[in-house]
Length: 532
Picture 1: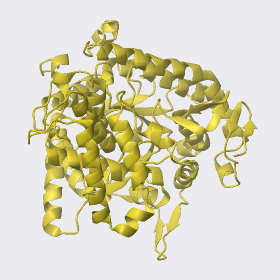
Picture 2: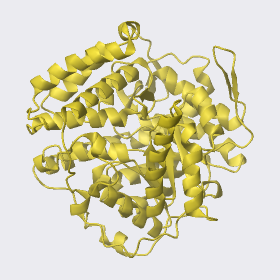
Picture 3: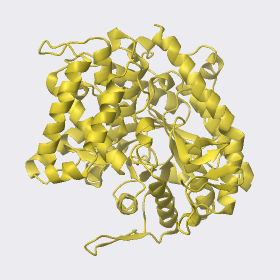
Picture 4: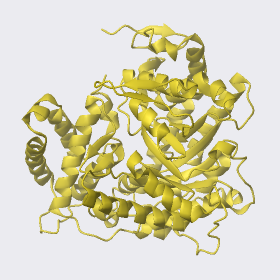
């Protein structure tokens, strides 16, 4: 039985060690406790509201723009301001808050490092606490890391600007209880990072900056804005000191971008096209609509109309309000083979040229080896400017709900289904083993790819879709392929790696979340029960 340690109104399932006390001390715990006390019930209601909205969509009503906030859409207003060190965000790198990654990312040829407590981090207690310590050390400038071969990694003198991504509204922190119930994971991440670092960040001319993922409504944005405002008041700093970029990575949120910007106008600096999670959300939100089933994920690219419309609308909406419109992720990993690497960089270049041409202010990469290529693209597009806020897209035709919901043409293939299975199983295995940022088949994958993979198959089964070879997708066919692809994984990785891993547990979880009649919203929720 694990010891339960009660501090303030919170109960900690884990013992707080001397190492933990670097970030979890009496003052930071009191700060966290106050935020949980004030916002716990509202968060519960917001999650309940999500269920209600989804039930309406499941019954046949398609998502649409909301009319009750027309006064916001039709009036002239701007966000409060963008700090100087966030004015230029042409290339951002993302990755988990592990020590070596933090150093390499901050040293890369990029403007911003998004340090991730969410999709690319497996949220064990130790990784969450170590991640907080790593970011605090980085802010102080005295972070270093020595690998097993004695190689030393240290921070350069002019590192990238740091932004922390906290966990989404739906995720709990099971190691900390409030009234016997797990607290919101995002509040845990935010409270510790903000409280322990805001003074040092401000003293160095930066500030407490955040990425907020997976919002679905303006009410959820207002919840975060109120969290930020209370945090500012509690430490007596000016309103709007905390700045956030919101990821538009859910289908419901794309219809409320003006409202999200407005209700976070004191704290927001921009929106981001979180393309992979957005595709996942399209599948999940429209799961009962048989005419909106996507094909193989390999053909669902930004040139598809529903994704192109999403990008254009985000740019137009943001720039009208003086906010940044950030582009999406390039998950490619450079290859050691020169010819193959040249092809990879060409694909990255083409993708980023499209984003820059559309008017995005910057874009994401997952590997430092892509930084120079993407930097060149945006240097050329921006010229002497720091961003593209001047690109209004006001002459565009109005983006319609029909465009944002337009079905995507393409085949559903046996090869695509098998690839989905292999990627999802390998990612889940890595995640429950403690690694949330995983190189698989030349791509740096996070939870979003596994989510797309397993929900696609679930939806194909749900609606009895037929593969290009004429086979109907059924639970039996999936389970047969799952067993076969598990053997392929074992052959690819070798017996030693396979037997020492948790691939059978991962396959069991994949089987359960793909074949049950009720779609599980996020694989990370049941997966969280398999990690410490």
